[in-house]
Image (cartoon, helix red, strand yellow):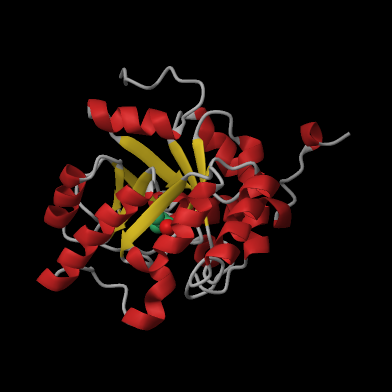
Length: 272
Ligand code: KIV
């Protein structure tokens, strides 16, 4: 299938803007390591997000709060080494940008300088405007993130759908405009009603990337391990899986164990 932007050798924020303009959907997935990122880039995925979901899928934490800037930099550096074409966005972890715009800029500069990534992402609306504005003064592209913002789990106490009530929906719409006016190049809309996501997408000129936000957004993002069927216990309604790699890996390992124990591996051709 031919897509408008397939031929670009490097996806930039301008390419994403063009995709919105021409109605070509943006495909984004997470990656946290070199091997997976290399595979993703070979598929011509548009955006690779080094998400702070690494706290969950790579480190086994219950929330995204514990992951540190140093850890995110290690993951992001490995991903950037693997990527030639996709735009690489790195999540700013909890505690590195909220409430102190100078610290926010210093954190974003560390990410850009030490990893070679293309952009950063951070959660929140008007309450993080000062941080976003300061990061942008350094010429660092910022992706926003509204709706379910997992770094605020202790404030909201639940990972349920957000902005179902009129006042929260209005607030989200307002925040979307704040992010756009501040100069964000794009924003993630996580787990909000499809109708609200469609309204945001219509009203703002920058691309919206949905996760559990319906189809009328400019692109979609999923956590790689979730969509591959590696994450075993996480099955939200919005998640479509494209494989049973969790079962496949376990089966492969079981076969290996059996071959080793039955003296079937290695055979004569597999030795020197
Ligand atoms: O950390 C992450 O993976 C994310 C996506 C779910 C958007 O923020």
